[in-house]
Image (cartoon, rainbow, N blue to C red; front, side, top):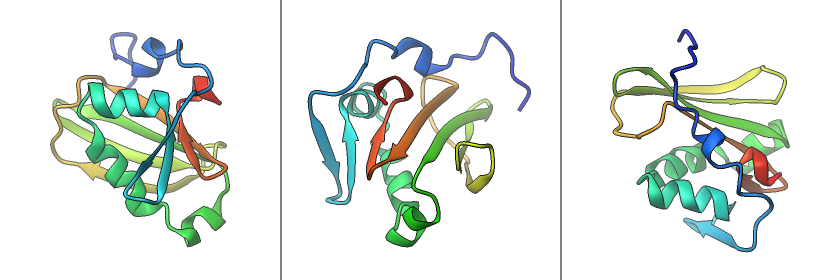
Length: 121
């Protein structure tokens, strides 16, 4: 997807999440922070946590301890989820054929068994 300044990067709006006061658990395996909870609740994106949880198995965590997860609009209501090692090396990629997610891009970091916003790291 060609990047342009008109894309709505949700992380630009979430910089006020710094650290976390609470931790949440999704499906008993995925631990995440206040900022991730805000995205899931405010934007109806628990489905995104489901998608990430599907891939974060013990074997996948062993592959890379630090992971960058990104949801990015391709066209209209079609998105792509990618996970990389923080150096741009793609570990997985999946197309989401339809979502009503309100932003164009959101990024999470996964490290120390916790999913967080980049500003919460």
